[in-house]
Image 1 (tube, helix red, strand yellow):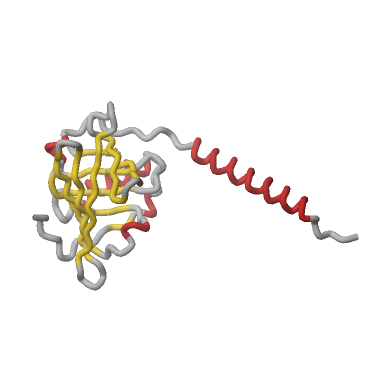
Image 2 (cartoon, helix red, strand yellow):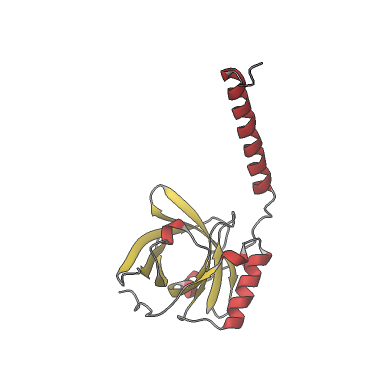
Length: 188
C-alpha cells in the first residue's frame, strides 16, 4: 500500500496545521494581561534628552552599537522624536519620527511613527517622580527600553526597572545594556 498522501489530504493536513498554529498564537496572545501604564505623564517635563540604558533587542536598532539616545520635543500636534546612536564604525545614525497622544491616556500612551503609515505603541510603564528615569514598552511585550536623563543609571534604579519589566511580563533575561562610551551631545 502506498503511504504517500494524496494532494487533497496534504492540503487538508497543511490547513489543519496552520489552524493549530493560529489557535496557539491566539491563545498565547490572549494570555497576556493588559499592560498598565503610569497614571499620567507631564509631557513638558518629559520632553528633552533621554539616554538609553538598556533595551530588548530589536531589528530597527540592530545597527546601534553604543551611545543611543532620544530627544522628545513638544509640537502643537504631538511630540517630535529624534533617535540617535553610534554605529560600530563610529558614525552616528539618526532617525526622526512623530508621536501622537492616545486619547484618554493623559500622556502615558503614545503612537509613534518613523515610516508612514506604520505606527508603534510607546507606553510609559514606570516613571521616576523626578523624571530622572523611565521604563517604556508596548503591550505585546516585544519592545522595551530603560531610559535615563544621564548617560549612566544607578544600579539599584536599573534593577528596580528590570524587576518591574519582569513583573509586567517582559523577558528580563533578554534585556541588554547599552554602552554609553562616548555619549552623544545634545541634539541641535
